Length: 303
Image (tube, rainbow, N blue to C red; front, side, top):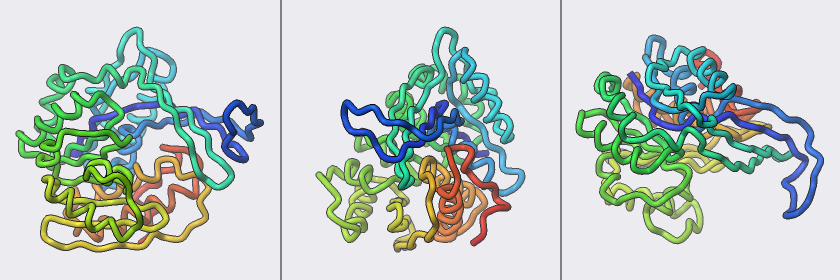
């Protein structure tokens, strides 16, 4: 079983010809409400991209509003176990306000809402579920103390711990010693490695080595159109170039990659094969609009 602990958001998506300047009113092209949130996106990606029969469950919070009901329906429609998807009375479901421009680039502002109520007590209540898991996947759109406690719990239970440290935030150094797979972009890698900036792609192997030294067993750095760099516990490392596609919306591309990668790892596939599979899934996702609406199924992914 793959257990995802993380955020649930309704995405409020506005297509724009370009990003507005400060103080400017700009006419948009199209508005949509689309299920999202890094945790929910990654859960949906795991459910759609893992091998048939792979159980996927989520530990999260939604509000007692219309968005919360819609998000639960979207999650359960993918066959995801929602027993520990808590509805919090008096709270709004988390939202993300997303602008997507004509070049498929996005600008995102999030309001945590009920995501901020995913506390340590709820993780402890979900312990029976975590005990059944083989892989536990987390991100940083819920309170950091909750993430730290969940990682420590999953590690103590001998689970494979996967961390996507996004949005980029500082974390205790010793936490990385309990992470089996660290999947992050170059900005997040620089932050965790305590480097001021990433000068160019040649710096990525050094950043990965630094993260290994801090304790992360396996490091996967996503580089957007420049591909993916992987450095693994068995000493293998290397760069895989990105697939060339005509992107229309990059929202949830990273989440799709993570779901595809973890789905493949859960099946016992080689990590570099898992990267290639995840890249193919992510490349397909950017040719579609939205977050969960863009995530492909296993049958759609062609290597």
